[in-house]
Image 1 (cartoon, one colour):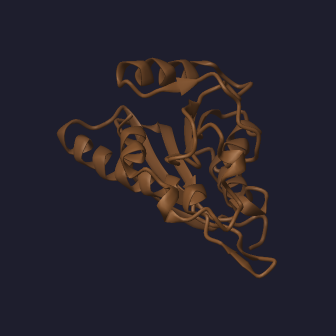
Image 2 (cartoon, rainbow, N blue to C red):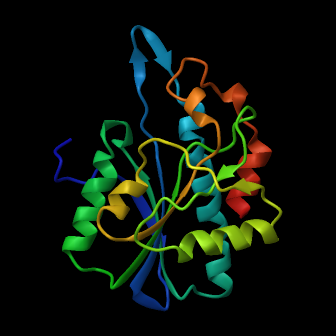
Length: 199
């Protein structure tokens, strides 16, 4: 994939003000074979399952009452290649000046039975408001979270580097779980993924 091309899928819902957007994103690529071992990336891609659930839920809500802003759902390729897909998407969407205001909610590696709480340490230097809002909603929805930072690269960085407000949904303890042959569907807690998607 050329670095100046966006490769991925996105759908959305029109809002009342189409100069504002919330972009909900996750990635669907993974490592594949490494040293002749298959790295399936079930946890690393479980976020995609929640992305589809969120999209379906919000589509139903939009029928009752349109949202104030456009809601865009993106499934990025190239996250494992230095966030290539999200970088290209952000470059295109900002260069075309489609929106005056953009927020990004990026979901990555949630729902492991062996992981911990949601790690919601503010990792953005752009804005605190989004993290504060997510923490308030988490408390109201009884979703456990911690002010913990998980080290690693994610698609949220493409938005952060472009000065776009963002929040990164990731689970504590994933460093020891991802990019390994043991990252298979049996390590996932689908009820937890559901709970986070509803949040």
